[in-house]
Every structure is written in structure tokens, then in C-alpha cells.
Image (tube, rainbow, N blue to C red; front, top):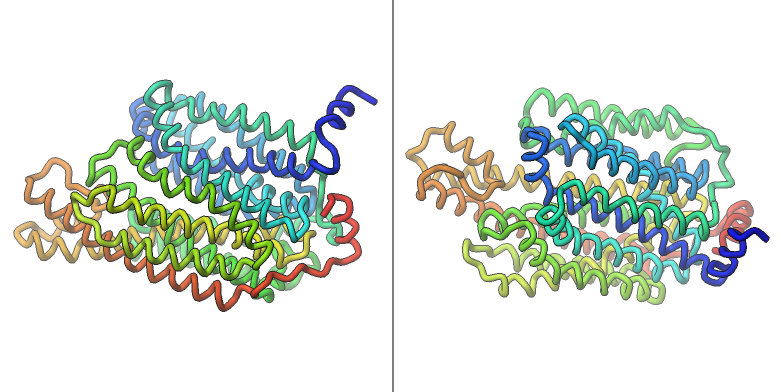
Length: 520
């Protein structure tokens, strides 16, 4: 026996292998989610160091979002076809290497290019984490494992702004990307030692190029339109053209998938009420929650005057509750099914959003604390049961693409939510500014409305600044109440579509052989 095999046998055996696998997937997920939050904190320092333009800063975020969202389904399906562990390791290496190259960036173009490459790595990692966990754990333990996975995600979101703020203030903006390197190294080592390879044995390892091309074009156009809609104008020729391309691309994808023997996405998945319902809830909850976080952070920083680090600390109670509620909800979903937990969580989210929809310029943090705790509890009750409902409703051989579809629903929902709430705040705020500042020209009021996300008007008179803050709060409060109704809609969807107890899918003989191999 070689020394490597002896070491593996000593620390990893069939009894604990799946828990080592879970640890590796959680390391990778931690890296992805941490990166999502720390980058925003570093943008001012990046601008100063590289002399980046405002457009360059926007594309530092958008390039990652675009490549990540567009390739999630493709990354998941390639894992099913060629090996989930293999594609996961590919994603980790790409993510780690691009992080190092971002830290070495000497120009805006260099930075944006490797942020896009980093998104490609994340798109291969994210669906693989959930599909590997689904294949490593039997259905009756899957909720507990996914709950732990969700808790780690919340932990990264919780400490991201705090860690990012500390590193940017005391080390450098480059350090937030270099932090990914040791995390990636640990994920690679543990995966090589502990994780069995798995793939869809029922499908030949061939790529559906027509499907990949159509969904890539369609999603790229859709996400780009959502990201740029508020700045380019929703009625502009560029946005209308992108939306037209998105419709053509996605319709072409749907048609192409019905004409191939081994489609990239099997639309029979959506015949399962639980799978369809979980994806609808994923879109709805991301639509309501991510948009809320984005604009609530603007309120705390630009209206209340908190620093990015202080803002991150004030979100901690919510994310700490998610850390503990997620694993508990995962265990409960194994016993009582995901439907009651998801429904209750979305109702709590709706109450929290309505509570938050009464902001004033000087609203005390103590008044908001209860709503943050309630939001954390609601999110904890939704996220892991939602993932469990989706993954338990498909055959284990299709776990990769199913995970990719679910992740895509979350990503597109969040992007759509930020775009829709931004447009809503701009529209409502414009109406308010027309009433409060009639002495200004229409062009001046239009410019102020377009910048409402900043929460203040900059170098203008005290009257104008006060009017802009009042307009922002008026629009934000109405938007939060609308988000509350969206969360209630999600609760109805969860109760109606998610089956009372998610069925354990019947497996083909090939799937049973694969499940036996990986210990499912």
C-alpha cells in the first residue's frame, strides 16, 4: 500500500467519506459566496489604485455575474456527462487561478477579463457542489447535508463584508482575492482524497452543442439586459434588441431540446410539481431578498452614514440566524417534508419586509433588528428545504443539470429583482421629486431620479438633498412592501406546488448501480 493510500485509509473510510465530501463542497461554496460579498467593499480602493472608471467598476461586478449566470446549466450538465468531481475540480482550479491573476491586475481591462473567467469557474463549481452532495447522501439524510451546505453559504455572506472591510482597510484590496487560494487548495485536496466520481451513466458523454449555444446566447442577452436596463433605459434600442435576442435564443433552446435524444435539460423535470415549485420559489425568493439587501445596504450607507464595515456588522444578526436555522430546517425537512418549512419561511420573510417598509431618515437600528432576525429565520427555513425538494424530485443521475437549473433560477431571480426594484425606485422617486421640487427643470429632476440609488444628491443645496432623501425613502418603502407581497406569492406557490413529502425517485438500473457505487 502506498503512503498516499495509507493516509487516505487512515482518515477517510466508507463510514465518513460522505462527510469529508460535504466538507470539500462547503469549502468551495464558502469561497464562491465570500467572493460575492467582499468585492463590493473593495470597489473604491480598486478605483483609486487602478484609476478605474465608473463603467469599469460596474463591469467588475457585471462580468462575473454574466459569465456565472449564463454557464450554470451548462456547467451542471457537463458534470453529469463527464464526471461531477472532474468538473468541480476544473471549476475550483479556474476560480483559484483567476483570483490570483485578478490580484496581479495592472489595468481595468485585466481586472474585468479575469473577473469574467472567475465567473466561469464559479459556474462549474456551484451546481457540482449540490449534485455531488445529492449523490453522496441518501434521500433520508440529504436535507441534513443540504442544510449544512446552506449554513456555510450564510456564514460566508455574514463574514464577507466584515472580512472584506478589514482586509481592504488594513492590508490591500488584492488580499481579498488572494484569500481564495488556500481555500481552493484545501477544497482540491479533500475532494481528491474523499469524493467518488459520479456521472449520468444513462447518457453517452456527448455535448448538445445546439442546446449549449442557444441557452448561452439567450441567457447572456437576458442577463445583460437586466443588468444594464436601468442605465441604458428600458425602452432603448439596445435593451429592446437584447430582450428580443433573449426570447429567440431561449425559444430556440426549448425547440432544440425536444429534437435531440440526450437533451441538455430534460423538460420532463418540470412535470414534477416539487421541482417546478422549487425553481419558482428560488426565483421569487431571490427576486425579493437580493434586491432588498442591495438597496437596504444603500440606505444604511448613504442615508444613515454607516461605513461598508459598519453596514456588514449590522447585517450579522440576520445571517447568524440563517447559519443556525439552515441546518435545523434541513433536518426537519427529512422528517416532515419541505413544504411547511418553505411556506412558513416565506410568510416570515413577507412580515419582515413589510416591517422594514416603514423607514425614515433616522430610524433606529434597534427598530430594524427584530426584522433582520425574522428575515434570517425565514431565509433559513426556505433555502435548504427548497434545494432538498428540487434534488429529491429528480433521478440521481440528473443531479448536476438539476442543480444548475435551480442555481440559474436563483441567479436570474436576484438579477431581475435588483433591476426591477431599481426601476421601481427610480419611477416612484421621480413622481415624488416632481411634487417636491417643481422649481427645477424636468431634465434636472430626471437626473436626480436616475441617481436615487445613491440616497443623496451630492453637491447641491440642503433643500434638494433633503428632497432626494425623502424621495428615495418613499420609493424604497413602497418597494419593500411590494417585495413583501412577492414573498407572500412565493408562500402560496410553495404550499400549492411542493408535494407534502418529496417523493424518492425511482431509479433506473444504471442509476441504482451508480448510487450503489457512491454510497447513496
